[in-house]
Image 1: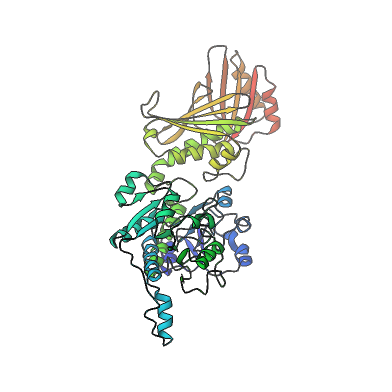
Image 2 (image 1 turned 90 degrees about the vertical axis):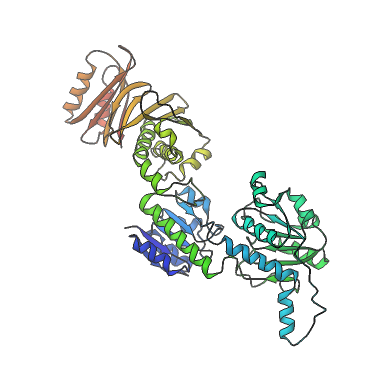
Amino acid sequence: MAKVLIADELSPRAAEILTERGVHVDFVPGLPPAALKERIALYDGLAVRSATKVTKGLLAHAAKLRVIGRAGIGVDNIDVEAATERGIVVMNTPYGNSITAAEHTIALLFALCRQIPAADRSTQAGRWEKSRFMGVELSGKTLGVIGCGFVGAAVAERALGLRMKVVAYDPFLSAEHARDLGVEKVGFETLLARGDFITLHTPLTEVTRDLIDHRALAKTKPGVRLVNCARGGLVAEDDLAAALDSGHVAGAAIDVFVEEPATRSPLFGRDNVVATPHLGASTSEAQENVALQIAEQMVDFLLTGAVSNAVNMPPLTAEEARRLSPYMRLAEQLGSFAGQLTETGIKSVAVEYEGAIAELNVKPLTAVALTGLLVPQLTTVNMVNAPVICRERDIRVSETRRAEPVDYQTLIRVVVETERRRREVAGTLFGGKPRLVSVEGIPLEAELGRNVLFVRNLDKPGFIGALGNALGAAKVNIATFHLGRTAPGGEAIALVEVDQGLTPTILDTVRALPNVIQVKALRF
């Protein structure tokens, strides 16, 4: 039974969903880092919000961990790179709290333009300072939206309903989608220059860190007001404080801080700053939604292999996982076959799909083929980190499809270029089972059993008998024997499935036979 640790406060319904579908759940929120490190090795899955820090050091103790689920959008509390290196899927819930975050942004816009927090404090202190709190209207003003994903688009929609003009900067926003949203797509500096209000809705990366610094603030309108409900670190807090002091920035509403919990900040203690303690996703509806969503995603992955909303691998539905299951085994065997024969550095890998398989989602199959190829050289590799490992090792990976079948109704071919040679292996499905149909361009049909002897030799009379005698003398029982050759007298290949493992002594005996070119013991 798969085991999941819920390490942060989540709706109780999340644990119920996991349990109902046959997953063991431990709900232990608030574990100190040392205690979490001690017990993480027991679990296949880890569910967190933003409080638990999933560091590289923690993951080094997570021997069984297969999936990390973040109940929310941001994954900056998770070392995604370290998780990917260890082959761990990292999922988030990009839809569950988008409405709540957008509504909080609009609430902060209203609070900022009408100075509601400061007016509330003054009034409850017994002072009636009506003339002190002169506000500004939102209607007719220009809102600059930085980042127009789910949350940014929801904010834009609500701002348009308030009769605001909306300009948006997002490198991934198409002109067509901008038209559909009713916003004007502009460049970053244009947005800074035109926005009466600016709101941020972008993830925190090395590119976006300190996106709004003194240089960016200098390009904004005098009297601009800024809202950040996205991530602490997008705004350089000291630079914003200086711009508030100078009066260039009229006000700011900040829900997220560089350091959280934020007990100190250069932005605190100002009437023109509205501060909230990371409340963007804090509604009962949003917390329920993200908890249920991450529980469903994690259990689907653990039980069916379905991957949704992963930040480090392609999506794969449960139905696709079911349909691709026999092809997964085939792709893994083809990659493994090529990998076990490879003795020098790999320069490139091409995975080709022909016939019916070319119509399916082949991204997971390519990842599985790469996994099989790399496993003989690396122990900690799976379909999550295999593509990353190839990039790190400068192994070029290509993927081609041909919908029209050539020799078989469906075919997968793996072509590996090494420092010394080109190696090719192809296979198909017979009765839903993997079947090898070509090795090095030599036609040859074989099912791959647990232990297989691979022999490449010159096609000379008496070789098959000599090979059989050598195996018989070593008391190796042959299960199946498959042969292929380029032409009479040319190169030939024998794939011999045997009932036991092949020792180095047996391999040396076969290697010593006349006309042998290469001998390998393969395991599948």
